[in-house]
Image (cartoon, rainbow, N blue to C red):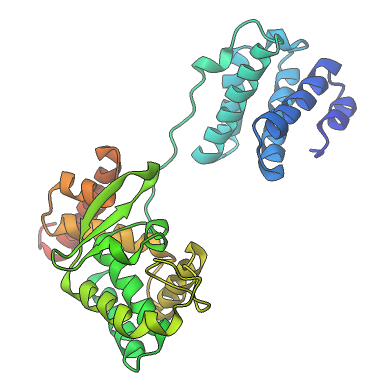
Length: 316
C-alpha cells in the first residue's frame, strides 16, 4: 500500500471524505500530539488499512463507520496471522481515530469506546541459571583484578543489577550518596519519580566499594558530579553504555538467550521467588505498582519447577 494515503485513496476509488480524514488525523498526530515521524507514519498506515477495509465492507461515509466494521477489521487481521501485539496497536489506532473524528464532528458517536483487542502476550526475557551467573561473576572478578577502572566499574554494575533487580535506567541514575553501606541498602528513584529502598548483598557491597576506592577515582572529573557510575570521559554513564556492556558479557557466555540488563532483573526476581521470598517483598524490591506484574515471575518459577519434576521424578 502506498505511503501516501490520499494517493492510495484516489487509486482505490476512495471517497474524498476518507482521504481528507487521513490528512487531518495525520496533522493531529504530528502537530497536536507531537509524535515522531515514525509514529505518525505508523498511525497513518493503520488508518489507511482500516478505511480501505471499511470501503470494502460497503462504507461510503465516515458517519457509517461503526463498531461492527472495526471488529471485522481486527478479525480479518487476526485470521491473517497478525500477532496480538500488532492487533493491540491497530485497535489503539482505531480508537484514537474515532475519538478524534468525534471531536472534529466527523462521527456522531464513538464506536471505538467499545472496541477491545486481544491482550498483549506477556513474555519475559531468559532467566540465567545460577551456574551461568557464577561463570559471569568469575569473569568479571578476573577482569577487575588488575584495577582497570572500566573493568572494576563493569563488575560493580552487574553485581548491583543482579543483587537488587533494579532497572538499567535506575542504575544509571544512581548517585554516590544513594548508598547506605552500614545497612546495605540503596535508595532508588523509579518510575513516576517514586523512591524506594532496596537491599543488596555482600558481593555487590564489595564490588561497589572496590569501584569507589579503585575505579571511580581514575575516571572522575569536573563533569562527574555525584554520579555513581561514570563513562570513560568521566560523565554519568548512560543506559546505552550499560546495555552494551551487559550484552557483550552475555555473548561471551555463549550458552544463554539473555541479551540485556533486564535479564538480570528477571533472574533476580525469579531466584528470589525460587528461594521462598514473599511475593509482596519482591514487588517492593522491584518497584512494581501492581502485584500482577510481579506474579509473572511465579509463572516462570512454576515452569522451572515443573521441568525439574519431569526430569527427576520416575513417574512424572
